[in-house]
Length: 362
Ligand SMILES: [Zn+2]
Image (cartoon, rainbow, N blue to C red):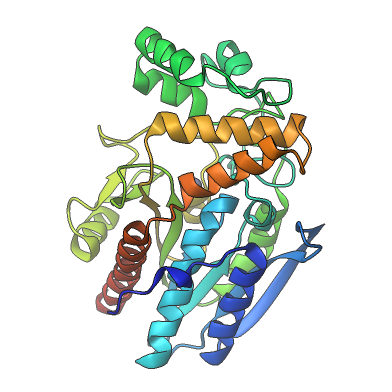
């Protein structure tokens, strides 16, 4: 498979969307768009796009989704477009494909992880009987540090404070408290919302139609910002059955994934997209993994998220500090490094090919 030049990465949401639609329509795939009723920085309409192939094998479906975490969509979109362009020059997969582009179009367009209601979409997919309330132990004590309620100032001793907190509580406990998902502080980081988000509602309504008649699904949801630079891991936020564990091992390799019950799992989050998809009974076998690509260190990423969230709520869009915070977030979740871009897109394409092979053989 050819390595794509960094230009495959779109400079903004509108371009990413256009490229996605162009590649899908050149493949003859069916396109659908769902408006979230909002606009981007240049007045463009914000929509979540869906492309569906016809496929000869329709009881098995490959699902590839991007942009659940807004700004992370630049990478996921580049992988989706690279795959479609590759198939245009070779051969399209016989397995039916469902590509979901820009699940959080607002965050994608406005360079945020969170959506139009400050919701972290990957904390919003609670299951029946779970409630949109509460926060992990320790979040309340960290609230003032994580979510300052004033406009950004030029110098804030973030790293020092973060290191002090790590020394005091330890990294695993801190990560769990901060990133586990909270439903109490609506302007805070990792807020899971007060009810199902717009994109969850769209997915709930349409996934059964898109996946109608399928028996086996392999779903890769692309993310960035966790793990070492250029490396990747499949993260699984639901307990795996023996059969699912075997599929992951055979399709992607025994070291390729971390399940929720494994010792290395970074942290356990509430309201994950994967666990929700698997619980919807959309297919007899629904295999989901979050394909997570590493960029920068955890403290840098957290500092970037905090600064952008602070600027978003307490600064104005034209402030140099807001523009700086957005640019920084972009770099943290989609590094400009040509090495990162080409290696990660190639790895992403390989995961998709492995999933297709696996589906064909299962
Ligand atoms: Zn993510």
